[in-house]
Length: 336
Image 1 (cartoon, rainbow, N blue to C red):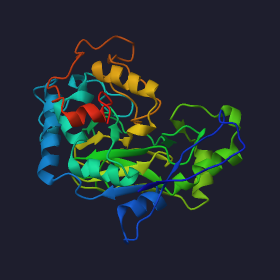
Image 2: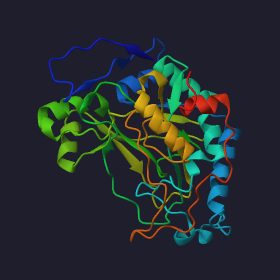
Image 3: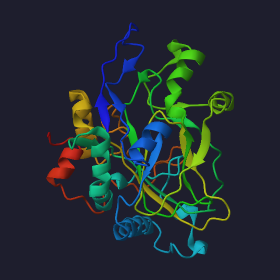
Image 4: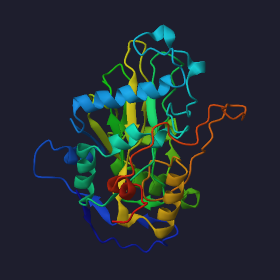
């Protein structure tokens, strides 16, 4: 779980922002919290019951079929890229109000998922990100090359955000899955201090690394690791961990299906962040991986590469979520 620490520094706050948290390992051997602290990532086994995981995957496929009724998940000859909704360059779906579909909010409220983040942050008063859906049909398009990055601004020091993937499909060695650079979360701050100019540090919670920069991490023992998981597992990782979305190989016939969901203590969000989060929720919009900070609306309208808007745009979910007390608090609409 996260514990509060006191950090002092002579550096101006405009250059470095320190977190009051650090991850504490548990006494139990092989506990996933220990993996999260030491490796920068962990797999929480069986966070979602297998029947529920199958339900969420089915609902995700059914959502795709509202764009292409002929799509058959068991028949790859029916998979037509031009019929599918537009994806981001990360193979994710975040437009068409999909992030607020009823099944997406049901998954975000799964007890095993929420409980895991309650253990991490030592609180049950959480906010959740309005994050995307990933349904990757294998061998449908050319796989991307690795794009190592971290999702925390170089200016930020310490533990600020833990990201999550609700895994709904088998993720074996040949399948699509999260790829992490194990151990990098403990070294990214040293990297920026020793190898970069502070004047280049940005506030954007996203930073890419080139091949030469990656060699610095490999020389210090970091290793590329594809995270293996089963339907219902929850994958969590420190936002300082370098990672990317691993593509399936030609040997894979698994439809990767995952829901991205990150949770953070509500008390960490500023009043301004809460107001912006409420606006985005009311617009059925998507945000970044961060639930509590740097809250920005992703484009509501999906567009083709030439800028032409997709006429299939949806301004609201097909199945709206039930606005329970839990949903309203996780979304920031209602305070704890």
